View 1 (cartoon, rainbow over the protein chains, first blue to last red):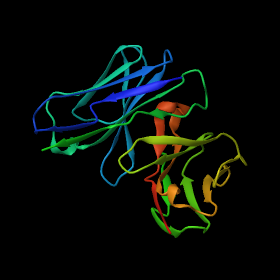
View 2: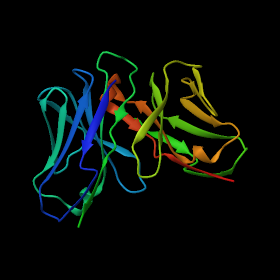
View 3: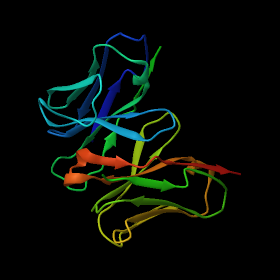
Length: 114
Length: 113
């Protein structure tokens, strides 16, 4: 069966510090991968999605970036965090070849920028 | 631009009662998803609705889709406390790519004894 791992679970970082969140998927190959952010009391905002190694689409301008160095690895980064980057970050994957595949989410990382 | 609106955003109901959550979307879409999120947790896929008139049921939850009205409903039958969670609907946006899944703001359901 497929599993998605996301770490760390919680993170407290000062403003201006760098960020690296990692997500890996097991049990499937060539998935679509996604990073979402959920701010407190708000819905989910798509940040990045990837259909393959090195292929990243960005949905909103921000000081975050994403990379996909391996087929099942997706990394979210920032060089300098802002207060507004606080939130709940969720990685997700879906089956590329299935038209109706739902997104399968990881357990999330709760980031607090102080 | 595709917009997805859920109502109500907050719902407090007693155990044993029935209620419906509504999800309206603004432009044509051929896929609609329902997710559940427990407090502090990730999202769990509940239903995938693919065609007009589609109805899916799991336990006390039943979801339906009317693509002509651009409306999906999530009906709760005889609510129990375990159903307390936030429920999101999501619609595939422009281009039909799963990468453009637009979520509603969620309906926070609280079921009280």
